Length: 179
Image (cartoon, rainbow, N blue to C red; front, side):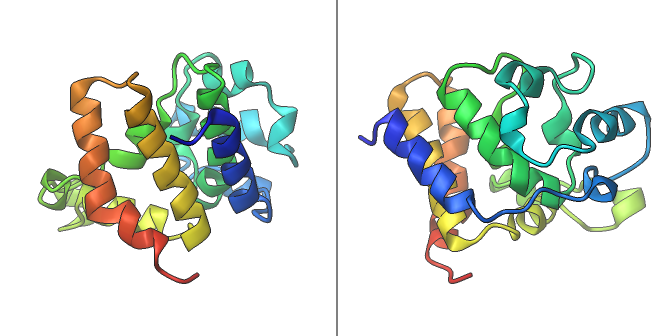
């Protein structure tokens, strides 16, 4: 099994060239107070290392929901910070595993996001689109992280099943796709 330090190095190497998102591109939507709070919390940040794991976990305003509102670009940039913080045991509110698996189950291929607003778009479609920003090397780092989380034995059985399905349905094949 890969060690935590080896996995952290793998993640950092895979994401080393990802630029921070411009301030106008931090959140996907401006609808509601929470996305605006995420925008404000991350505006002006040029290096994810300038945010403590505790701040990441609570952002925005103690809600701990930033990962749910990031734009694709911000998700790609800040994911490494969340993965590292999780591996260091510093996250209490955030669950990167959920964000990397929830839309990649077979059931998600059938469940519409919001049929009235988005037509036939499923959670699978939305997730695959979001994750399409990752290179094969980044997908490999993500798959390695997910595999580590299962082998570490600190996931619920239902989470282990979701990880297995997400790896099988999506992440492992993305590792072999050229950027």
